[in-house]
Length: 378
Image (cartoon, rainbow, N blue to C red; front, side, top):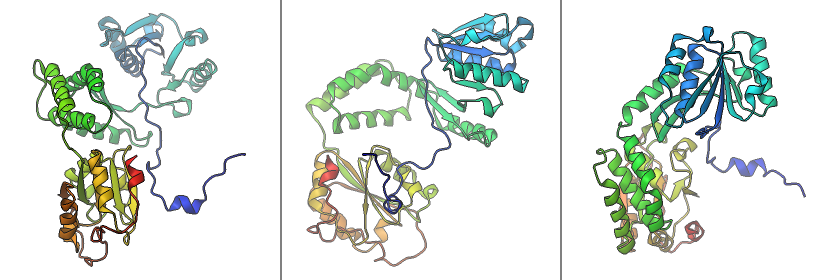
């Protein structure tokens, strides 16, 4: 029996977990793969250098007389990656060049040549990009922030490349150069740590503590040994790390969330949010977090909250405005703490005055029955 789509009315009531995307961002391993570059321009040289920096075996098809000085310098210098290779063919590209290739890029002046290259690549099953000719591109390149193995790519879907460059400069300023060394440390210890710590709360707390160090200092000598020892301590003395964080979303503008609010959303396992929270605020949460809409009139059961926290879950109560300005906030916190639930408050940016009873936090009566959070725990 063929599947039928859900009624539109049902879909409209649910917040989207992912907003509409112009393109799908992918990260493509090319280490040891064959790549084809056609053309000897500076633009082709940059793409050849990029592919070789990923460890690809880059076959360059262009008569030597047409190679730019930048390309000649690249061929003389060689690739940055230890496994990368640059192989120059002193001729124009031909259809046999696509055999076994993972990717193909060309810089073509003439429309007919661009079309021929695109069709030849497509016939061979190879993704093709013809520089500055979107009609002959199966994929796009973005601006890159390189802290490899951490790589950040920015795309504007071709709408404003200069904007992508501006974004890249700002991200470059935010990410410390030591990030690449910390990422290498994480790569080196990942299997050992994950063998010691099963998926769940203890493993999460280890990696969150690791991330806290990344932005404070550079990795010192012997740090890998000390980190593995820390994982061993979490095995023998696991700490209770579940908690409830009440986060204020302020007036509902994602750009007005505090940095602490964003960090709380990105660390949450479960997010309970009221009907006034817009999708662009929820978009800031980590994808794996369970999201539970809570109607204004609903009362949440404290025992269910305690069960989530007892399993090490980090629960965020995402509320419009500033939660501490709402009626019953102090009583709510006291009720949670009486059940042994650690509570943290992250105030929201003050919005225009509103009635204190407009958006109740909903914990005044712990015995009430909706929504049922037991399913969230599993």
